[in-house]
Image (cartoon, rainbow, N blue to C red; front, top):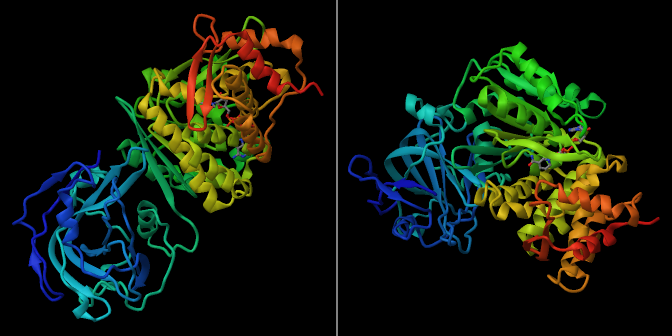
Length: 599
Ligand SMILES: NC(=O)c1ccc[n+]([C@@H]2O[C@H](COP(=O)([O-])OP(=O)(O)OC[C@H]3O[C@@H](n4cnc5c(N)ncnc54)[C@H](O)[C@@H]3O)[C@@H](O)[C@H]2O)c1
C-alpha cells in the first residue's frame, strides 16, 4: 500500500507569487498514488507547456525531472530534491510535447524530515523525501514568464517512514552531500538554465541513490530495491554495485540497530578461494564500525550441505559468543545461503539473517523467499535435497553484482536456468525480454545485469509474497525441479543445480505435452533453444532406460511429492503453469525421454 500524506494545493498564480502552505493546511491521507482525489492537486501543478524530463546540473547539484506514473497511468510527474540547507526543489512535469529549454520548476522551502518509502505490488520500493513545505514560488527558467499559466502546489508530506529512527530522533537527513551555500536559492531552481545534460538512471529510486551519493553518475551506481513482506517479517532485497563495502550501513538500516552488532559471517571460500580473498575483505570493510566480526568458512558442496555443516557453524557461533543481538551473515552461493540461513534459524531460536549471495542463482533465487535447509542421505545412498530445513527469511539480501566478475562461467550460466524458469512463469514479455537481453547478460554487461537480476528476483518476490508457505502459487517455482532434484540425487552425474534445472525445464515441457496440457513442440523447442544459447545442457548423458526406475523413485521422495505420489509443475503456456498431482507414469517417462541423451 502506498500512503501519501499530502498538503492540499492552496495556491496558484504567477511566477512571483508566494504563499505559505504550512500551518493552514490539513493533512490528507491518500491510499494510492492513483487516488483520484489527488488529481486536482496534480493538475494544479501544471502549466500549459510540458517540460522535458531530464537532468541538469546547477552549482554542483543535480536536478532531475522524472516522470512517475501512478498505478493507472496517472501522469504524476514530479521530483523533489532536498538542497542540503533544508530547502526543497520540486520539479514537476506533465507528459506531453516537450518544449526545448523550458522547464517548469517550483521551489518549496521546507523542512526535511527524513524519508518514506512506497512499495509497489511487485516489491519495488521507492524512497521519497519526507518534508513539510513552507513557501512556494515558481520560476520559469527561460525567463519567459508569459508562458506560464499557473501553478502550483502543495507539497507533500509523504507518510510511512523509511528512516524511522532518524525521524524519531528528529535528525534531518540531507539528500545530497553538498553544502547549502552552493545552491543559490534566489535564482530559480536552476532547472533549464545552463543545462548540462547527464544521464541519471530513469528509475527515481536509482536516481535518488546517485543524488544522495552526491556524485556525477559517470558510472552506474544505481541500486534496485525491493521488499518482500511476510506475515511477521520482511526481506529487503538490494541489487547494486559495490554494496558489500557498504554492508554495515545497509544492515543497520535494515535491522534498525546501529552499533554493537556482532556479525557472524559464514563464508563460502569460492572457486580457488576467490570469494574469501576478494569479496570477504570488502564485506569486512563494509562492517567496520558496526561491531565485532567473526568469520567461519562454509564448504560449498551438496555433500557438505548437511546437518554436520550446520553443527560446525553452531560450534563456531558458540565460541564467538553469537547471541540474539548478533547478525548472522552468509557470503557465498546458494549452498552457503541455505546452510548459514538454516544455522541462523535454529541458533537461539532464530537470529537476524543477512544474505550476501555471490552467485547469479543465489541472487535471483536461493537468497529470496525464506527457505533455508540442508540435504539428507537417502537409504539408496543418494542425496535427498533440502529435506531438512526451516522457513527463516533474511532481513536483508545484498546482491552486489560486482562479485559476479569472479564467478566461473559454468556457475554463472547455471544461474541463468532459474532466470529462464522465472521468465516462463512470468509470461511472454518476460521471456521475450530475456531472449533479447541474453547476449548482454552473457557478456555480464553491467547495465543489463543489474536490471536483469532485479527483474528476475522480482518474479520470485511476487510469487513468494502471494504464497509464502507454498500453499498455492509458490509451487510454480518448482517448474522443472522434480526432474532436476532426481538428477541431482545422482551425484555421479556431476550436474550443477542450474544445469539440472535446465534439463528439468525441457523434461517438464515434454511432459506437459504428454499430459495433454499443450500440443506440438513449439514451447519445448523455444525453451531448448534459449537454454542452449545460454550454454546450458538440455539433455543428460550417462543415464539410460535402465536408470529410469531409480530416477522415478527419487522423484517420489522429493519434498514436493505427496504420499509417495509424484507432483509435477508443468507449463500449459508461457506464463501459465499448473501443478499436476500424480501425473502418471507415462507422463513422467515422456519427460525423461525428452532429455536422455544415449550418446
Ligand atoms: N533456498 C532456496 O530457496 C533455494 C533456491 C534455489 C537453490 N537453492 C540451493 O542453492 C544451491 C545452489 O546454489 P549455487 O548455484 O549458487 O551453487 P553453489 O553455492 O554451490 O556455488 C557454486 C560454486 O561457485 C563458487 N562461488 C560462489 N560465488 C562465487 C564467486 N563470486 N566467484 C567465484 N566462485 C564463486 C562456490 O564456491 C561453488 O564452488 C543448491 O544447493 C540449491 O538447492 C536454494
